[in-house]
Image 1 (cartoon, rainbow, N blue to C red):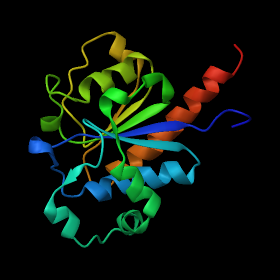
Image 2: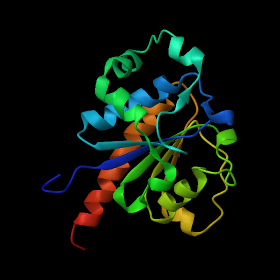
Image 3: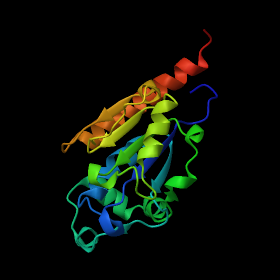
Length: 182
């Protein structure tokens, strides 16, 4: 990137009800974007609504993961440390990041909930930064300011990796546009 600092990406995990992450395939959703970003020398920061180690369901911790990236994540000490030491969403400074990749469900994204990701998603978009939402959420983006950004949404088995590729490319292009003289 010709002297520019590395792309800095936020992976935000929405909490399920009662503080337990509800998506049973969470590791399979985190691992593809996490390693795509890391393998492209991006800085990756993980965040949850309240920070710290996310409460994973017992079933998830006991599941045998068939996905190679999930197995890589579970055997990677640095990745597990990143997950264990997530920032709280209130600690996120939008200007420190080029883009955000959000994992969760619409049920987990109520704007009135403490630690909701909705205000953070809106702030990224209002500042012109791209956001990927996996699975895709029903999110009211009626504010004209929110339309300054780009939303990438998906909700199938390939959504995590495809959205991650798109988000990384858009973040790189946005960075190049901002760095080039007009």
